[in-house]
Structures are given as C-alpha cells and as structure tokens.
Image 1 (cartoon, helix red, strand yellow):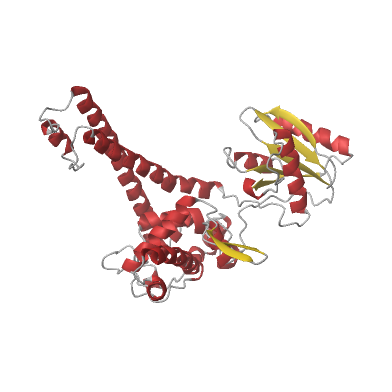
Image 2: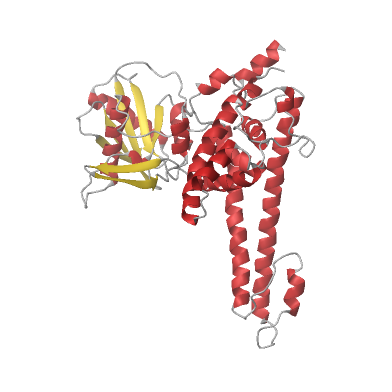
Length: 436
C-alpha cells in the first residue's frame, strides 16, 4: 500500500493539500544558479521570429531575426549573444514571449533546452502613452526584454507573467471549450432557419425532430409552396443543426461519465481519475451546479492554477472593481472584465441559478436584502456582486471543503454517484491526497 501511495504522489496527479497550495503552474527545471544571466525575448510571427538579447538594464537590446521554429538558429544566436556580451558559455538564459496564437509549445521546447521560460501578458507591458508611437517587431523585442529584466530584478509592476498549465490540464480544457463553440454553431443554425422562413412570412415554427415533416407542408403567406432551392437549403441547415446537437449531447455525456467515474473511485478508494474529474465531482454535489458547469470551473480555474487569495480568484475572471480617483474626482469604472469572458458569463449564469436552487443560502439572503428592491438595474448590479462572492465561496469549498453557509447538497437518492461526502471526505484537496 505504501508503494502504491508513493507512485500516486510521484505521478503528479494526486497531491497533498500542502503540496497543492504550494504548487506552481509555471514550474521550471533546476537551472544554473549563476548570477550571470542572458535575457532573451521572442517576438513571434508566422514566418519570422525577432530575438532580443540583453545582459543588464540600461543596455540597448541586440535584435536578430530567425525563421519561425528554427531552434538550431536560436541556439546559434544565443551563443553569439553570449560571446558579444562577454558572458561565459554556461551562463543562464532567461527567455520571455507574449501570450498569443502559438500557445505553450514554444515554452515547453525552451524548458527542455534548459532555458528558463516565461510568457508575459501582452496588456501588462508598459508602453508610451503618446497618441502616436512607433511600433515595430524590433521595438517590441527590445521592450519585452527590458520588461523581463525588470521583472527578474523584482519589479512586480513591470509586467505580469501568466501561469502555464501542464499538458494534462491543457488537454482537459478542450472538451468544455469545444462545447462552447458547438453551442454557438447550434444557435447560428437555429437562427438562420428561422430567418429564412421569416422571409416567406412564416414566423410561428418549432424546430424539433418533426421539422422536416412540417417543412413539406409549409406554404408562403400567398399560399404557394416553398421554392425548391430554399427547401433544399433548409434541409441542409437542419442536418447541420442535428449534427451539432448530437455532438453537444455526446460531450455532455462524456463529462458526466468522467464525473461519475471519479465519484465511484472515491467510494472504492481508487485513484484512476484525473484531478479535473475529482474536483468537478466535488463541485457537482452542490445544488444548482451541473456536470458541464463543474467541469468548466475545474479545468479553467481550480484544478491547476495556484490561487493565493480571494482577490486573485476574482481578478482571474474580471470580477474586481476598477476605481478612478484623481484629485477631487472619484468614480467607479465598473468591473475590470479581464481574463476569459466566458468564465465571467458562466459565473453570472451560476449566480442567477443559485438564487433559484439555493434560495435559503446566506448568499441568496444577502442578495435579496440588498438588491432585490424591484428595480431591474439594482438586480443586475447585485448579480455581479453575488457572482464574485459565489466564486470565492466555491474556491473555499474546493480547497478546504467549506460548504457555503446555508447551501444544500444534492440528495444521494436522486444522484447516486454523488457519495463522497457520505464517506467523510470534505474537500477536493483531501480526496486527491487520500491513500488507498
């Protein structure tokens, strides 16, 4: 049993609570601890990479160009920069590039080459505030390497580095992101079918399984049958709608099966499921949170990010205030709307559902007392505040097993696969670290 426990912990899937809290998502290898450092920036494009090199603040960056993805030329330019700056051959190399289309594969290649790599949030880099400023790839490469040196020197206002998921966490996100895209496609097909019918004066129509049967009987307002080309187009649109609906159903079943499997393994003290599935199962126990919602929150927020406090958690989805105070003028600009807009919209949706399914909870009571005064404007303002409070409460529930005050759990009779709390496992962190 001890041997199996050690293998589970060393696999990286199941960590103790202390390990999970101290986990860094931008983990690096054991790099050279030499104080002599070569800083490198990469300005990426589809065909060419601009490389910026500098060894200390105040020195003009050395900028070179290579073919995109040519790592042999990259190594040659690094060696050349070390010779020009008079650095030893074993000097540590610290690199940085902006988050964008290329994702994380460049970062992982650099780390495999024993290069410390960071990915910077583009909007956090300080720029000239003049109305017109010069912007070229060469200038950007020098600007990024300058921000990197300030960041490594301890200036936390120079820029913000994003946290990088491991390969498993990145792969787990594809399911819910694909579902969001396919849902938009389903809505587009539905609206297009209705729009085409409206052009013929047909407004009262239901798009369901019997749509093709009714299509043969449809007539325009003049009493004429639909045109052959229009009817053929509607049939093809409906076929694409059916395909999108079927794909959504399959993805929902896949998520539910993974959550159900995680619950069964927790009951049987087995550890085969991923961290994402275990945390999603833990969230699914709350009334008002289903498999799709819990899987999205798990893969996008809770399963791999190193979140230190409630402020970071709220800032992750852009639910933090942005005050503007200058002299005697003080005003609130609203929420920051940073991060992924889909997560922010999801939290707003969960907050509305929380008022219905968790009406007796303390959060719902607080919302009704403060914002439910009959005005639509106050309700909209309050739902954003409730979404922020609810996100923080869900974070405590995942990490510490602290159930939101007054919240109800789903009954075991209706949801037989939600059995982990019955067996005394209060938090997702504890259940990940439980030894078989």
